[in-house]
Image (tube, rainbow, N blue to C red; front, side):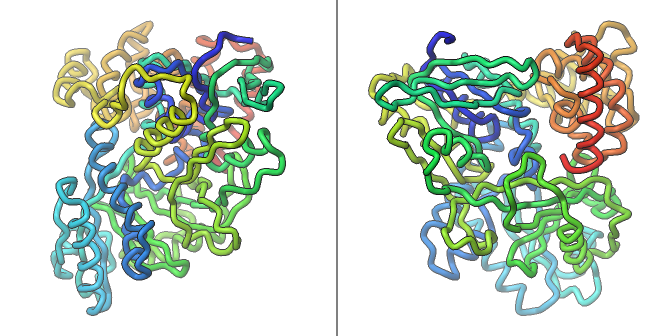
Length: 527
């Protein structure tokens, strides 16, 4: 058994990474385990918005629902903190809601005006009523036929997969030990039934190791109940999973830096069309779904998105226009009636079992920091033998990558002769991008392998050595984001990634072939 730590965190998505960072900054000894890659599940398959939740606000007002109101208020407060602390990955975005009935204009504007009021000093900009002419001038994607006007408002947008890595790196810099591709297979208990550690399977090396800890937190999102059943096979379900799919279209479908919020769908959700990495990202659906590490994208869900998008967009999209699709599972607090998941509140819960396992469930990306703070507060209250040496400081701690200004980083990259790649590098790595040059073994390692995005061998080497890349899709999908938006380009780059990973990680022939086959299969189906 390895030396004991204060806390073991199970789960390397948004919630687990946030908890590891909070705990490490408070002075606790932390180890985190993720069974796949960091952020491989739900946390890299979101709609890429940092938001309070316009839909939740509508439900709060219509049904006088205090819980939804609190959720919006917390989300808007956390939105400002998020954008400040991850400045290289998150930014304000203006969204336009096109409206085709006169009575919708005052209704939608009133709701978004209230959204602004709740934001208070955390506002990102003022909502405005737009004439049809102004709306079309500002966003040419909108269908002009019978358009009565529009409402614009502001929220945040971000790169979710990169944010997970920034949090993981920040936690490690604060003293945490982090391990991806390590699955917790057993909760180790003492004779009284209290958890004293975990047994972990290294999925790449094929080895098993036992780790001791004073406390264990379950932050596994959709897999929450899987870990709870390791603790107690009879534990009642805590979460329900719903599938949210996205499609990626060429930029011509959204020739504007402004996003579009589609206010009404047949299942009661909002849809968003957003500029993302030079493409048009459209999502999301909300259908009850089975637990799956790589949930499938169904033709029915794709048609649902295309139908609603084409109702509002001037340029009509077909399946042939789609560059990529992806699906994520939302971990929603169970309602008990197993009806529609679209109406469930995305609140969070913190439950400590008799064995001492603390489970953190529910929530959304925007509130990851607040959830982590509450989780560690709960942990310390339940474990008087654990003592923090510092208070919670995550609200004022920029993540790694956001600790130098954009202007400074861009100048350094230009001085390194990387002006052509500077925008790409800063958007992904922030102030850490200046270290990528150090991973070039020859001038060729700094030449782009693709025209767009301008990925280099030095960048790939950097992510292997500094960003925990252990499988090809760790880089192709989550570090670079390429496989998420253009699968054909990701397949084109795959041989180069395999070659560099083979050099850096010393694979044998069997391992390399296995990695290649897995990457090709997932890129051709669902990531």
